[in-house]
Length: 233
Image (cartoon, rainbow, N blue to C red; front, side, top):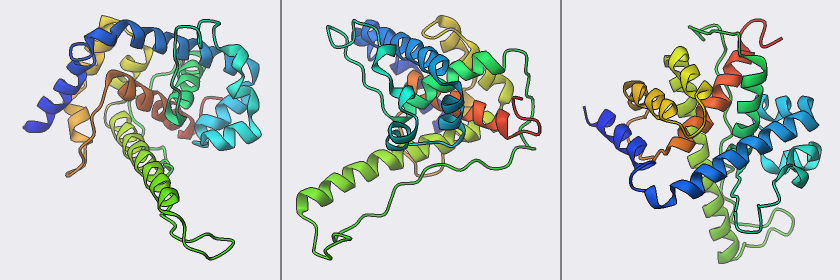
């Protein structure tokens, strides 16, 4: 009985506890959305690969550089607007554009035919240098630990997203098709509160925001739709 309350509180926090930052967050979300549209237009094949293969930023930068093209950022970024874009935000911005492009006329009521998705897990902690065999410095180990913590969180949120989309495809669709930052989006998320809470594993303590929920739903909805027989072809 506690979990739905926690979920609801987390959703409300994105519009109440952070009210002072609402304008900045709304602008950031709009910039990310426009960035996603732009890079998908630049390289639609790489865009689909990045989402479906759950690529990390390093892989995207190495093999799909157009997906990080700075020309897709508005001139206001860097001169008053600061944009934080991690792996999840980048793939979610792309996935959202692909959903609008590919799935406008698709309805999924059941994803049981879609095989389980893979989710990027954090690398194990290393305490010695692979090349020299010498112990790593305390600073290097701490940096790894911080990276592992971030990746562990991303892994948890990604699996959570798959669970939610599989549990209620129709409601997840309502969220990802709602206009960003609107009352309709919030209403769609609140309607999913019981499903959201049911997908939190026992012992997990993750603070979800409106943005993090929509991001993981968008990525997982598109991946599951493509995993179905016939995909989005």
